[in-house]
Length: 415
Ligand SMILES: Cc1cc2nc3c(=O)[nH]c(=O)nc-3n(C[C@H](O)[C@H](O)[C@H](O)COP(=O)(O)OP(=O)(O)OC[C@H]3O[C@@H](n4cnc5c(N)ncnc54)[C@H](O)[C@@H]3O)c2cc1C
Image (cartoon, rainbow, N blue to C red; front, side, top):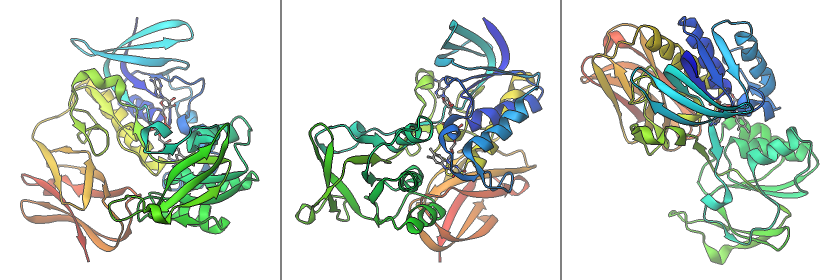
């Protein structure tokens, strides 16, 4: 059995940054990654747009991952085990026992603390209400991305995309660049779930139509997809079947949401947030179980990798401090919010009266003009104007902790 201070499960951008953070805290850590290489989803994201905030450059996914791999290379505190699929975490007296299947057989690691950095998986066709047959030619957007970018395959000629999250938008452009015809992106909601820059750069610049408040009602095809039926939806998101029309195509790409990979900690009784489909965390990115940390896409789906790295580094550093000397967990306050804000990460903050805390959150829909503010005991303690807030983009607010009294409430004031 291996022993270390911190085990990091997942070697994507979150896990890599967590290792840097843990080492900064003087802790020894081990990254367990199921893939044969580090980098997570970035390895298949060959488009640019990564690292704008952190490096002030537009890097591709693999370039961004290389920057972080270079940061852990040669660090004596950091070890990596690839081809290691973690399948269980057990609570022990003074830490955790993490078990994984690896190329060399079963691996068991005891650690004082654990960082969950497992990312997300895509919602498959079976997870949505999609009627009709199940011929070949239906792909999740990330699967199609891997087939095209890593394996050099073409997925189809005439493509329809369901869902306008970032992966769907990026893939619409990618397919056109690879010689496919993208007939349209269909989105059931009245607004896109993707970044505004991706709507412009991936759809508008390539003349790909985006149909909002519209969904796919049926898939048609025997061996291969031959077409789909689409229909606009009413305010209850029910298809208006009289307006249904047939679109001939040979490929359907699904970009209908991501599911955090939380199952590994499912037996530990952690506090759960149904909005994010993941666990709640405090400002150290620690779950309701002391010593178990969670950050990146497994905590909540992030639009920018820079935020993922920042979260991962903080989670890793706190996990390292927890393992070596313990964290100050006195005076915990729950962060509350109004109805425009869907959730906050973290959900809990410690009233230490010093330093700052960064709160990330998402809003329920798009707003043209608004103000985001934090209130403590009826007094405004932080505020910023928020022009053009969209449901798809992560928002943040920095709080000066010396101004917190007994509570903390976040509000979005619509102007
Ligand atoms: C198509 C697409 C386009 C994007 N475009 C941009 C962009 O232009 N700009 C930008 O800033 N961001 C972009 N993003 C977002 C960014 O890539 C993600 O937010 C980021 O990769 C999430 O990092 P992560 O480490 O949390 O998860 P991941 O990158 O998913 O890494 C998780 C890692 O955990 C490993 N793992 C999972 N389960 C186990 C297990 N049981 N045992 C061991 N290892 C395990 C996985 O193999 C993986 O390596 C894009 C994302 C996608 C999918």
